[in-house]
Every structure is written in structure tokens, then in C-alpha cells.
Length: 307
Image (cartoon, rainbow, N blue to C red; front, top):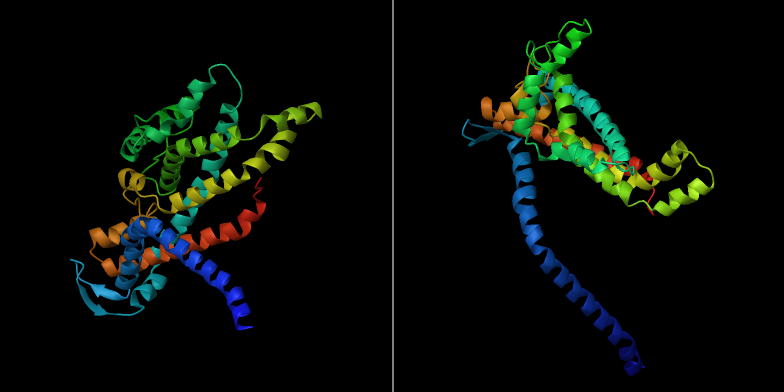
């Protein structure tokens, strides 16, 4: 019996040893990535969380533990609530427009038309434009007297708009700029997804007499849904993290109309030296993005059709 039990347990020990060896080898391969993530992602997150519970001097030196005081101040702050509203409006303005326009252009560029390669290059060209250059272009377009947009409105007898200095229009103006800047990357991702859909499916649909809209909603959109889901995720996160164009176009103004939470963090930390208060805002932004992303994976992924 003793010899028989050794015969049974020996293979299990060998398999267990092999699994441990494979796990160690896997960790060894992942070690460079884990070190980079630890240094540049996890350490800053934990350090920011630590700072959010302390009062810091202008030089970032810890002066004393204050617990949840920064978070309590944020909840009572009318400026922070205004910043949150501006952030949510900005996400609502940009994300649907980015995806719908990029999808329309990708569908157009996926057609077999003469000279479509030229238009594909034009549609994707915003990817090669830096934030500074893009913001400069729109700074000129939004100019109250020299800007193209106001000149076009005047052609139709409509008074010009103070795009960047009117609190009603400033957030919309920055949203338009952001949509234009993000259009190139979303267009390329969606076009790549469209070109991976088998042509045989469309040929079969043609034989069955399906029209364009029927093919779009019964073949294209379902098979493109994993790519659309990915674009939605990065568009939402990108909108929450928008900074450059706001700094260049409006500087958070007028009257805080474009002071979305990322810009508010920057101002509190580097303009006013409130590092602890800014850290608390950063943690709240992190939690909002985390919750929205989890929500998207929990409910949005159910609509995704994986082949």
C-alpha cells in the first residue's frame, strides 16, 4: 500500500513542481513591466493618496496629518462642484461626437471609391498634429473678428460669437477642438476594425437582397462592437484627462467655465501650491474614471459581439 501510494503522489508532485517553475518563469518575463508599472504608475498613485491626507508646504514638504480634511473641503467647495459639472458636460460633449464622426468617416473610407486613399490620409491627419499646433489653429478659427467661424456666420446674417471668452460657449469651443484632435486615432482604429470584417458576409447579404442599412446594423455594427467598445473606453478616459488645449485656449476660464477637474488639479498644485488639496482632487478623479470604466465593462461589454 505504501509503495502504491508513492506511485499515485509522485506525478502530482512533479506536476506541481512544473507549475511552480512555469509561474516563476512567467514572473521573470513580466518583471521589467512590473518594475516600470510599480515605479511610474503604482508608486505615484499611492504617493498621491498619502499626500491627500496631509498638509503640505509650497515646496511639497509634509507639515502634518489632517485626515479627511481635504476631502471634506472639496465636498463643501462650490468651485469643485462647478468643476465636476464642467467635467461631466465636457465628457458628454466630446465622447459621442468623437465616436459618431469617426465611425461615419471610417464607413466612408471603407468604401471602394476612386481616390479614397487621399481622403483616408486627410481623415487621419489630425493624429500627426500636436496639441500645441492644433490649439493654435483653433485659436485662430475662434478669433472674434478674424476667425473663419464668425466670418461664416456673418455670411448668413448671424452675429459673431465670443467663442473662447463667453462662458456659454467656451466649453463647447474646447470640446470642438478636442473632438477634432481625437478624430484621427479613432478613425484609424475603426477603419482597421471595418477592414477585418469578412467580405463574404456582405456578399451573402447581397445575395439575400439586404440593403445598406440592414447590412450596417445586422453585420457591420455587431462585428465592429469590440472595436467600438475599445474606442468608447479610451474616448471616455481621454476626455476626463484633457488638459493641453484647455491650458492653451482658455486657461480654465472664463469664470471657471472650462476649469475641468484635471485643470483644477494643475492650478491647485502648481499655481497655488496646495499639493495636498490637489492630491485629494486627483484621487477623486482616479476613482471616477475607475468607476466609469468598471461600469462600462460590466454593462457595455454585454452588447459586444465577439467572433
